[in-house]
Amino acid sequence: MTLRLAAVQLPGCTDDLAANQRVAIAAVREAAAAGARIVALPELATLPYFCSHKPEPYRAWAEPADGAQATVFSALARELGITLLLPIYERDPTTEAYHNAVLGFGPDGRSLRDGPVARKLHLPVGDDPPPGFDEPAHFTPGDRLYVVQAEGITLGILVCYDRRFPEAWRALRRKGADLVVVPVAGSGGDDMDFFIGEMRTHARENGLAVLCANKVGDEMVAGAQVDNFGYSAVIDADGSVLAVRPTTDGPGLVLADLDVAGIATIRRKLRYFEHRRSDLMA
Image 1 (tube, rainbow, N blue to C red):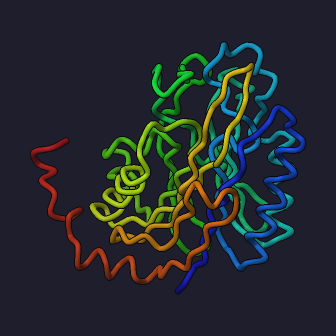
Image 2 (tube, helix red, strand yellow):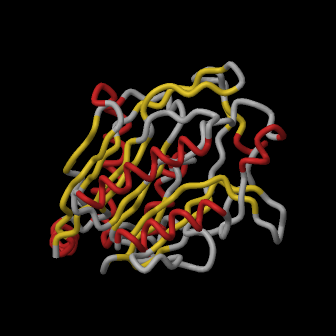
């Protein structure tokens, strides 16, 4: 079975959230028209990256997992008959906690699970690249990894910084994932060879395909500039780059056809996951 995947490389967002949403919707429609069955949007897809500042001015941007964004994008997934992954700034009305989360909708418009399909697990703090970031001031970390069924495969999600941790990739493979979706935004601080190379390595050593969606271009929040570097990509389970969109290509789609049956073939050939010494390494 061949499955067409689309990473949507959105332009940097502004503080006009309605306009950001319209841009995202148009891009999802374009991906569906190109035959994509699974469409992934970048981290905080319809918001500028605000984590360089105090959290209070941006709390009003958060919404519950069944809020207005969910209503709009679930209807869009149903209309287009696709699986759609939408990163949001989530407020959990039960706990009043705020999360960097991802919603997932199937071709029928229903959520892929009860609640978000992911909440960012690892929250970075740093001064470099400027203007810096303090995600723990804004978000509560997630407390588990999920996998969900979509389009005949099993997928998991690692939100941006979560991709840095090899254990997270191993855990998703143990849970049965075939595909890992990686939404990204903000100033990553990597050169692009490393950014892509890191995901290629995790893909190959775990036998996992990767669908990475990033923004591209600058965002301005409270007078501070945040750059987004693009390089959205689709990577096969042997680490081969199937498609990538560099910074210079700007916003647009990254489309690739994934040979789903080929994942099992790759795993039989590259047996790193089975050969690991789990008796020595917890």
